[in-house]
Length: 363
Picture 1: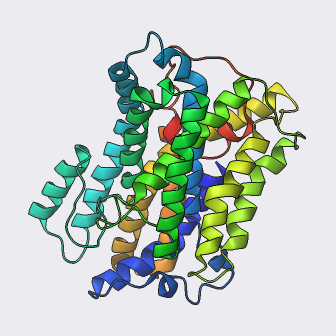
Picture 2 (picture 1 turned 180 degrees about the vertical axis):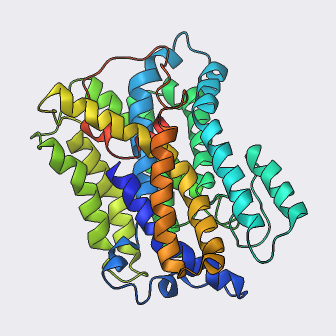
């Protein structure tokens, strides 16, 4: 949940600037989007939480399903579970994005209807360098989550630990090269970078699967950290590297390839002091995915409606962030949020899964 709120704040700052830049026909460079944001500049690298999402998704799903996928759980049934878990809220986010698009000054009902249908079917918009899912930009990561789930069900669960490490090493090498060429790891949302995000997805997801196997085998970090520290360390890391220049690709490489996996590994053995604390973290964790799925369209809608309401766009964006959080709390009570999963194994609670939205796609 901590990371989900950080992603929300990241987009609350960037969204109005990106929308206004695009409205004038000139999408702002990433450095310009964050120019003059003061202390909020620390949120600039909030996109790194997506890499944490994939990492934790692989970890949690491997704990729950790896053995079953290798024996009596068919891949198609596993994918059906994932669709039932992710699609309803993704669809709601898309519908809200359609409403935001129609509220804009250049609304085109025909184009919006086409984009809405494509997004509901998870078909990306391939043309140009704009968002591949214009109505709800975070949907690209959910599309690649489905891809990773399919690879998991068809291949990863059948690999030995050594073979799985080979997949991790190759995808990590490709990811490092991509980060170097792109001066960062923020690729994936745009139509011209979606395919480049395949190694960005596969590396952390496969690594999460491998880490889950080590965890189940009884391997543990050398020292268990207090659980509040394991919750806050990823946030502190991303905020710290946000102070570096936007072109500091080494920061993205270090975080995505090394530091975030290390922090997850440390979090895997954190123990909760009381059952009540675990219940609170699980409750907060159920809010993470709804918040991730719907927050950008609500921010967009708030910015589009700001002139009519006489609000400054920045104020409207933060009001939209508050509205998104309230809606996410309501949606967290829906049947998709805490659906029991067959074949679930029962490992010890992992502190991070209840408090960071990496459990979002993992669900």
